[in-house]
Image 1 (cartoon, one colour):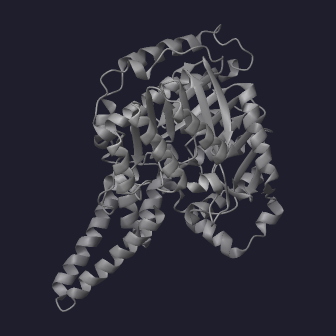
Image 2 (cartoon, one colour; image 1 turned 30 degrees about the horizontal axis):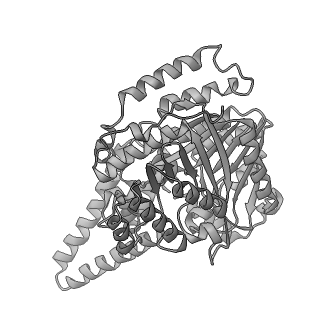
Image 3 (cartoon, one colour; image 1 turned 135 degrees about the vertical axis):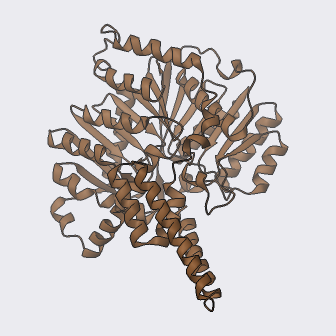
Length: 506
């Protein structure tokens, strides 16, 4: 996406120069064109000013528009527009179900009952559970069992096996699907199941999967697979929908088995990449009633992306056998939600932690509230540890993330740089009793612009499994020492400071 942005900035600059150059012998026309361009920038600045955003975000946009007018103009077209958000996602709101609202209200009242959740581990989490009931409309479910999947080979093996066993339907939703070895294993599996009469629906993000070939899609369609792009980008420049991406990764099989996590569909997730090497990621398999909520999220996205209603819902919400007693909430957030649900869940988890907070994120650009919560927890004696990649896949975000390390170290947060390959896992573990795993990075884009989905698991055994992987990742990382970090080269400090200016809008 950033490469596309750079290309368009260059294209716009060259185009403006050529347009002005064409009329260099006509100074009046040249002056009018230039004036119109800068009036447009001025008007955008006025709109930003009166949108009453956070002061830091307003200041960042105005600074970019003043110092770099052309760059700022293109950045705003790509990343800044939110005045059309409600209209864009209006159709998505109309399929929300009143029955879900009633369930949420009943569960909320139960959680407030002092006798509910007497379990020693769960009782302190009532605040978090109640928050997600309200801000994400996320009911809790108990009849579940789960499996932590470490890395691509284990994850794809489980996903492909589940798809192969499907009897009724397969629902798939990904940000990135590539036409490579792994992508074609998936394609052939879906074609096989569709030809056997299994109902297959397939959502891909219009930008993340923009390189997916027509041949790939045509072969799916010819086999009976239904597919739909989510917010396709037909005109890359001046497209208001470009800013809102579906970053979710969901697989649902027969309404009883679901997958969620950080892996997209591509060879790098299986065998690594030539540039970054080994690709470390985490996925999560769920069987049980929590899959109902994943199904609900998928069906809303399907209706929005395809415009097709699904008449009979019964087969998609089957009765479940007994799987276990693992308490799970599925939290969705995005520009169609009134609250930043996942961000608020992160903040509450961090701010109320008593013993330990462990975080892994490939892109770490917290807002002021999360940054303050992390520093305050560390200063109060909570063991706060953060693992970040040591190799960049997006340089602007990479250096912006580095700009936060110094103040975190100063507050007592222990920071590690993963150097075995590229770290893409998105994990939050708190006090050994709650784990969050899913698609949301700890950055402003995931919290406020992307469609994301996370599973919050309240179970000591499962959290212990996540912690095992976390400490293995620490073994494959180098700890950042404050005294050494202070001595880093001046050119690194300059890059950090410059990219930090963009952090409110990244």
